[in-house]
Length: 527
Image (cartoon, rainbow, N blue to C red; front, top):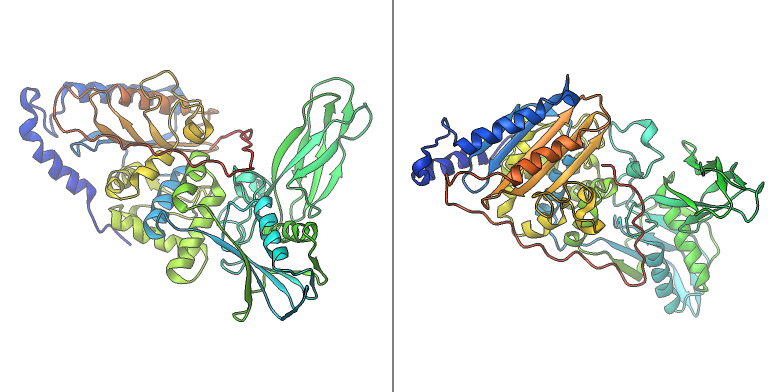
């Protein structure tokens, strides 16, 4: 699928149209203004930093007011974009599903009802909702109890068939599998808190009240789905060094190390093996709390019969609202669910292949040349994703015309804003600079890979679209270099080369946390 629209051709027309306003500067595409010349020299100097010795770079900056390319270093070079890939996935989701799209989780029954006895089975049917919490399953169980059902003679069937059973993304590395950012993908799942890392649990190790005793290990949500192998020890004093790991291919959590008496609990997010089973176990426990006994076993992966009767339902937040935790926190699971949901809605097949095909067609319609890039997953965790910086800038330029753009723009991380639902992965970067509260951009990180793509308003009020992709460096981090470029762009003044202005859109308020749910913003953000 190749380019259908041509943003850079449109940009060239816009540039030609502004020549009459160039005035005293006399600048043309071949003759940049003195300010543009200084800007290019500054970015060249930043990219000459020794931390990028032997590395590959792809950097493009476009003035969306005029269509002029202010900077282009290897803009057509394909590099690994890491989580910048989410720019494609998120815009396609909003464009194809719509900001009002919701996920629905429901409970249905088969068989006959007599008084409080259901002579049949209960079906818990997943709709792909990555924001389902234990509290939501409890509410579903309460709805079941309200109907008068007290005993279910059949099974509890967990229906996750909206998507396929391929749980892990293509090309993901085996050693990422236990970590929250590589959780298995299912249409029926549960998240431990309002980070909404579906398919994970938070494991807590709390020191005992005396030395020589193992710490107390608990999970959020509480569950018997996991087996804990507690090899850790409470010590009288010393540094806490607790390690929490899940054994590959199982739900055995191994806790090792030490924790001192009186220390705060040590906690970590851990993925589960087969998230559908965890959701079913959480729901079964909720049914029991509400006085509903299921006599049969829990069965995973069977479809709900078309003759089943509705019993209870839960609707997620809107897709527009989901964009905030998705993009601010760079949530990989949301990206993969949205990829499969796009495939399901558009082609009837909830697979990576179907979703990625639809995403490719959508971004081609915006003007990206999909013959120059490769997308292998929704999140950017695959190292086989390849996108040139120029194509990201094409996308960033094109989507400004979409009716949902203000929502999406607000959901991007904002530099130097300490609130986690505002600053997101940029909350501790560029504070106290002209870029703070100004840069709206998607971050990206893998070992040896870093990216920052988004928007910044220059000193003369022009909205600039930029993409910075850095690969194959050996130093620990090159984020400071990205920040230097972004701050430079925020301070750029174009010498009056054009009177055109494109204002940044107003930022809607972030969605409120659901009542009764306490946010847990303690997990470090690294992507």
